[in-house]
Length: 267
Image (tube, rainbow, N blue to C red; front, side, top):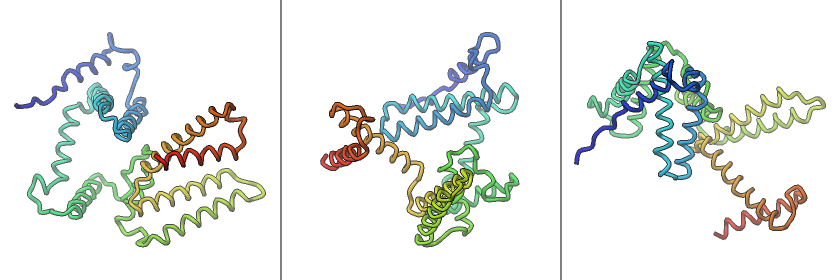
């Protein structure tokens, strides 16, 4: 049984009607490229959260919300005579075809390593054509800080600016911890210096994650979820004790924390 490709025309028409100068939605009409960026980021995170929770029945809805963001930008571009949805589709098709010569042009590439090398060479060529001379030129400033850190580190590693061994990576973290502690132990603490040193420490930790093959954004998200789950368990123990959280000592709350961890281990 043949399958029809989904027709995007109804969605494009809805977007156009929402932006209609006379009869459109006041909120949608008030938006511009910059104003909807936070919503785009939020929708992308909601897609990631759905996948993280493996709530795949919710994924079509979340992907639809994210697709709507793309359609919104295309409508804005169309109104200003810059581009439309067809131009976006055409460009991504051309880019994917160009960056996969081993699939579309018969270029020999049988291993993941060879494919990655070809991919990076093509991207470097594209950056050169756009007069982006630094390997760091096209890393988006709007990326979450952890994601941008690892992207920066991966880029500079490609040109040899990287440690080959794990030992200096770990040593750098200890060095940055010492520098943070030095600043907070001064008679007069300068918040700006503390912030600078904390930034260096976080950057060094991201570097360790990269060397270990760990995605820092995902690792921290999982750590957040684990802490939240365990803290809710602490709240449950405190409630069962008949006292408010604030009426417990830290030692008591730590004891509940240990109980929660033991409960998890026994499952």
